[in-house]
Image 1: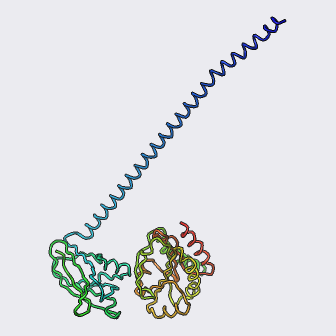
Image 2 (image 1 turned 180 degrees about the horizontal axis):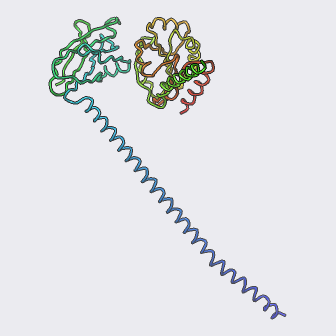
Image 3 (image 1 turned 90 degrees about the vertical axis):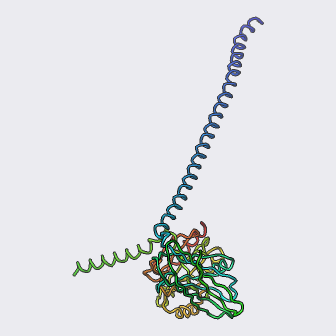
Length: 199
Length: 166
């Protein structure tokens, strides 16, 4: 009887052992596949990251190129519109400013108004801190020209103040830069308006 | 007779379309910068408001809808001023004293600027009254409204809120 039982169980045991062997073999196979899959995903991710980085670099370099192009175009436009030889630039500056609160500046070249600029409190503050403002740029033929600058604002004792300054410009070959400076004359307790030429 | 009427209607429509096209041509473009003297005596420059949502309202004392619209705009201004909304009323009258009287009469709080030389209204192609321009935080024109009809303030409110949220 025992022999019969053994004979009956033998194939069953065989089956179990073979199943276990298969299971043992398939377990490492799954792990390998998972590792391989993870490696593939990681590789794909790193590839996409690289691609993204490359794209980002491309975008950045393109942006830089656009900025460079914009600068070149700006310079070209300035050169074409205001050739250095006929260029005249007018700057406004302020020193101390205790006796004058600037409101606006109007410029006339040869009797024709070329600029009329209103200054905000912030702009006046910037001028008082040493800023220089290019109020106008123009092309002038060589020869004599008359510049009239009219300054309006508040003078001593917050009274409305309007003063003009005139200068004859002798435009030669080459660019010319003129600075319209507002200073304080302490002795007279009045503002003073000077037009200086930059060498 | 019918033909003439049709032609006239067509012409009127074309003129209207052309006028609205003139102002809406600014939409999406950087708002032209300007500086004007205000009712407080201060000079105000648009570019100094960069970072805020700005409404520019062109108006005149002889314009009825402007008178109707201004108190509503003032409400909008007082409500949203603290969250980065500014309103610049640009008066185009030749005589600024009339505008000053109307400001006092209506009791508006927003800054009113005087464009008696009409330079700024030319910059913004103003060919109707009132004209309301909405400028975003980046300084670009986003909405242009010509004229005023009751209910427009709702549109303004929606647009201001959406620009403030950006």
